[in-house]
Figure 1 (cartoon, one colour):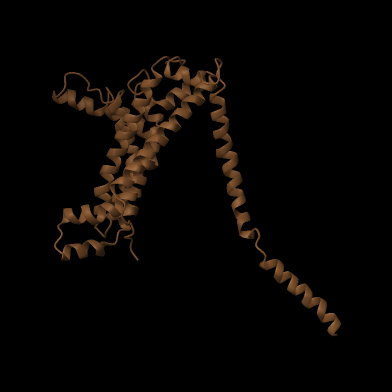
Figure 2 (cartoon, one colour):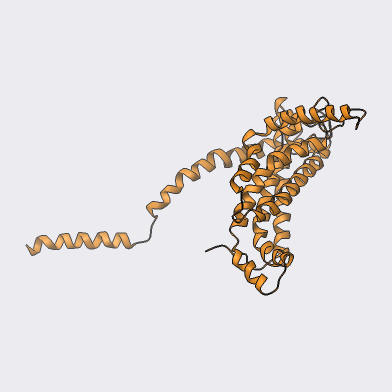
Length: 305
C-alpha cells in the first residue's frame, strides 16, 4: 500500500514543481492572432511600401527627387501639395475641436433634449464623405440652391464660388469630421468630476476661472488626442478634395497625387508620396504632443468615481 502511494506523491510533487517554474503563460497565446494580424496587414504592407519607394528608375532616392522636383505624371506641384494638405487638415482639425469643446462641455450634464441633439450631430457621420460632398455641390455649387437664392434676391451678380476651391473642401471636412470630434470630446468632458468645479465655486472662483484652472487641464489630454485623430482623419482627405475641390492646384492634396501615380503604374513615386504623408503626419503629431507636455505637466486625474 505504502509502496503504491509513494510514486503518486512523487508524481504530484513533480507536477507542482513544473507548475511553479516560470514559463509562458497560456493566456499569452491569446495575443498570437492579434500579432499575426498586425504583421500580415500592417507591418508587411508598411515595409513593402517603404521598400517600393526606393525602387525608382533613376536610383534608390529618385522617386523622392521626382516628388520634390515636381516631375510627376500630372506636373501640378507636388511640393505645394504638402502645404495644401497641411492647411486643410490643420484648419479642419482646429475648427472641429474648437467647436466640439464648448458644446461637449455644456452637454456633459443632464440637459433637456440631449439625446436628440447628439443624434442630430451624428447624422453627417452616417452619410459618409461622398454623400456629403455630392450634397454640397447641389447646395453650394454654381447652380446650387444658395447661389440661386442670392441671384434671385439680387445679393450677387454672379454665382459665388463656394465649391471647387479651398473653402468648399474645408466645409466638407468640417461637416463630416465634426461628429467624430464631438463624440470624443463628449466622452472626455463627461468624465470630469463636477464636484471639483463646485468646490472651486464655493471658494469664490468664477466660471472662466473654473474652466481655465480646473476643467481645461483635465480636458487637455482629451483635446490633444481628439486633435491628433481629427488631423490624421483630415490629412488623408480624398473624396472631398476630388468632388468638391479642384485637382488642378488649389486643393490638390497628397492622397490625390499618390492615387494618380498609382493609376499610371508609377508605383515607386506613389509609395514615396505615401511615405512623405506618413512622415509629415508623424512630425505634426510629435509637435502637438510636445506642446501639450509643455503647456501642462500636472495631474490629469479628475474622473468620476
